[in-house]
Length: 480
Image 1 (cartoon, rainbow, N blue to C red):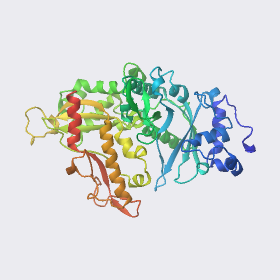
Image 2 (tube, one colour):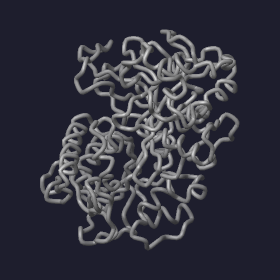
Image 3 (cartoon, rainbow, N blue to C red):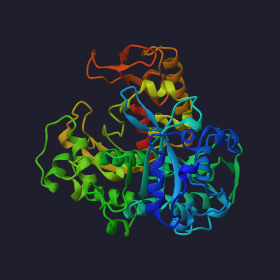
Image 4 (tube, rainbow, N blue to C red):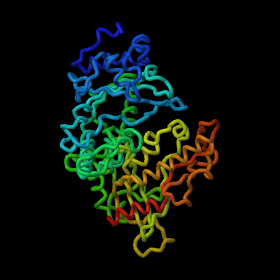
């Protein structure tokens, strides 16, 4: 411990950041010594204990109940967050960044500016460590140390997220909160299902414990920024605003991010694909995905060129995890095709025994932007001409809690069979079961294989929404 003194200037972010670099490449045991570890009162700390261990033993300030930032004099919050290493050697975000517990009784009386999240987390010192299963927290290696100031535009979107969460609590719907309600800031579940539910002020229904957190998708963009710098210790404080963005600060002052995006679709409602191309002054395409291309172009607005007509490349979609899904339907509203997602990462499913930390949970609790193109009225089903499909609607959607419960069963089934090395369509849910979701192949060909954590290689399979489930989603919105 003596080599950690003199420590740092607790009023200076720069000094704290410089001091934090001592962690890189080491574990806490290596830095403080085994004698300190054995004598520490933090020896038995649970899952959330690493930050407290860093606070007391590395930064050497006493743990207290002060609700402000950890480094109060500098206005800097300390957060430890895990990375996992894939078979390929790539580092990947392990989980969302939990920021502050939600007190249902008090948060309804707060504004965004008076909230603990805003007070604590505008500027954070993020300590990234390499998570290893069954390795003591004392022996986890620290990889990166990062000063992250939430950009002004991100704060505008997070403000709308915060207000959306609080408004739901004010309506007595804390028990209905979902991570898919919002874009960057989520109300994530804490603890096991049905564990110690809390009272809420405007309903007698008990609600699960939840915390404000930055979504895994947002944290991936932070990690991508760190990797891009090529250093183990980086800061974004002096960086300019990113250029690949969909909306600007002035637009966000007039409405939420989602209101701005939906506003871009309204002038085109009722127009055919060819009419929209003409209105936008673009050459019609004959590509099979031309409906998706034009939907992306509308959503992107004036940013279409900088993000190459793909809103998934925008900072807002990357940070929020929003997924644009273009669907085509017959004139009666029935959706023509199933909706696919990413391929199943068998390694992630094998290693992760927590539904709430799973990749599928993140995907299905994300916010979705559905854009529907439909056959003109009276046109026969066998005359499905993409050029004449009309833009019917565009809306943001969150999967309801009862469907999340079904999704958990879907994931349980997948994980059970991956663990048993039964990676085959005959074991997974199929479309004929009519359970909203199914599994089927999505590889380029029979030779396009994925790593099997049980050994060897197996065919790639994908997460899917059944077409009838997407029809139900569309019809519920159109009838609302």
